Length: 213
Image 1: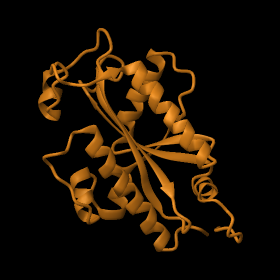
Image 2: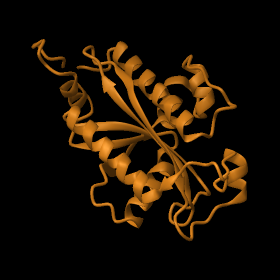
Image 3: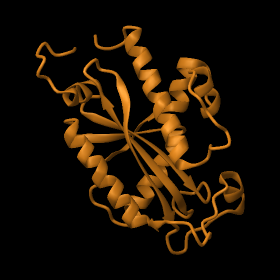
């Protein structure tokens, strides 16, 4: 329930809403479907906040292009699908280790601000992104992976329930969220649209009386 004290910080509302888990919206663009062997090309993570009325909103977005790890597989079909050219001379990218270390640090800072003990992945078809996050964390022996190892919020499932649509573009359309197909398959764009969709679903549920009890 909402606190009686006006001095209660929104961060504690966030922690209470998700059982001390911090939802972080992630999208990853890759060179294939195999998290163990295929390259991560882009990653974006959207951090959320909660206002004093318990409504979720976008706080900030982390985005980086990623240098494929040594020996990584990249399928030509994946590049055609995403339109990403990992070999472009003007492509500004950082190593996988650097990118994930920076992202994990940012997430841990948000966890502290929002009084949460662990992050939980939010993604569209979350199993895919979760596999690549865990594989990269293991590959670089990153000890402080903030994400729960297997639990997640899947917006494909949630939007199927809320709007009868499981494709991201169609779910956004049903939720009255602008979606530009020409910008899709960029980690930055898809993560922000997924974050908008997640916030819309959670806030709608609250408006319908689903939370707080």
